[in-house]
Amino acid sequence: MVSDKTSTPTAQSPVTPDVLAKYEMVIGLEVHCQLVTATKIFAGDSNQFGSEPNTNISVITLGHPGTLPKLNRKAVEYAIRMGLACESEITRYNVFARKNYFYPDLPKGYQLSQDKTPICVGGQIPVKFKDASGQAVEKAVQLHHIHLEEDAGKSIHETSDYGDAGSLLDYNRAGTPLIEMVTDPVIHSAEEAAAYLTEVRRLVRYLEICDGNMEEGSLRCDVNVSVRLWGEERLGTKVEVKNMNSIRNVQRAIETEFRRQVEALETGEPILQQTRMFDATNGQTYSMRTKETMNDYRYFPDPDLSPVLVSEAWLATIKASMPALPKERYETFLNQYGLPEYDAALLTDVKELADYYEAVCRLTTNYKAASNWIMGPVKAHLSEKALRDHQAFPVSAERLAELIALVDAGSVSFSTASQRIFPLLIEQPDKTAEAIAHEQNLLQNSNTDALQTLVKEVLAAWPDKVKEYKKGKKGLLGLFMGEVMKKSGGSADPKLTNELLVKALSQ
Image (tube, rainbow, N blue to C red; front, top):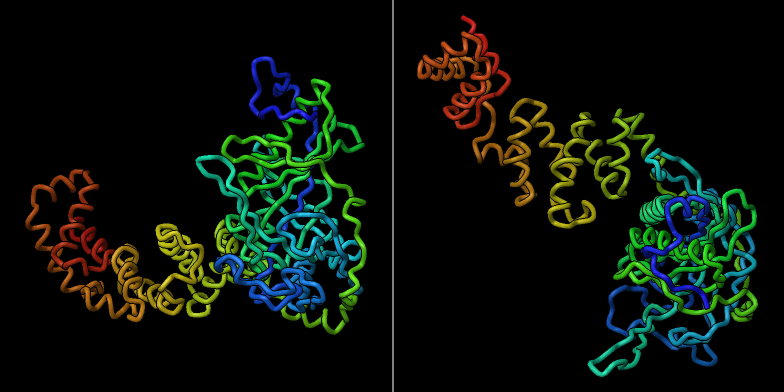
């Protein structure tokens, strides 16, 4: 029987850092992305998350005798979008197959999937990550293929004070369109796997084909892990690990399974090809079932679905509808808007923020100020309110551009704009920044004569401090600035006030 030892070595454990260093980790990922079509892949049932159990179902979803599936065209287009984004070869002649296996939440007793003709073949996804030594690494993770299939339902296992209370079945998810992205076994660290998953999630959100929410199960990852001695060409026995609802848990599962397999090899125990589950509470994997082989699934073409032909005209239409991808927008932000690499990387990380930034830039030419506002006050507000993107953010691009213009014109300082006007804009998004500044008496006083009068009054009130300043205590300039600002009610132009103070104190 395969070892179920934990990832934490005991005092007698052979898994020391030196032992681990003898082995190479080989990882392949299978990422399932639920497509955000309005209806399911082979039925007209609603494809909405969060509905009451067993409300988004029909006789087709439940696999009643005599019912026939009909392919959702939009699901095919979404799959092709992903393939184009990954530089995959798009399969022109597609056949759906029945993948036979018994599972309680698979009503038909088989899953409609693709076997011999996956919709997308090959391709790659560039990733950036840091290796174990902290060195930055850039690499393209090679894809084997992307195929379309339907999701199964969901089993809900209930317990009571007396033990197992049985299982409930919710078929709402059954028939949800999925793309499964299968990499080649080319990933060699948990960090690289996390970088790949992060990039997949970013891509599906940019393409608007999946919301990427792992906690809701709309993006799920199965990890295939094997180990071999460094220099060995033959792959070790592959073990699949399931049940991970976050990128961090994927990393933990990989590290745990790597250590478990190394310990098994070091102690002479066999590694079985099997499916294991990951328990996030204790950080261990445990056996679920012996892994099925391809023969077990008994694939054969579905007789109820005609082959799908992707014509050149259809493919051209999909290509024309492709949005700008993260890499393209990154280059635009560097070259067109003149942003530093850090700004461009941060702003393109989330599609909605990139959209918001570009909307602001259409209304201002101060592109760096727009970046500073979004990376600073805007992101701070989103984090504070636990909002993922600007769609729930009340300040429109037009209002933010007006606030930037107010600062650029010297009418208000950045600190006044960010600390006093910006919070009021969030509360009153229909008002302009200038209107709020007027109401709150925040517009800066740039009247030289009026400010000179205030400067004279402040210096006359602090003769001892003036003497100290002239003897070398230049830090007192801040005191004088503060007093002038008080007298002006905060409306004094800081730059002009500073110039007038320095000039007066030098006389």
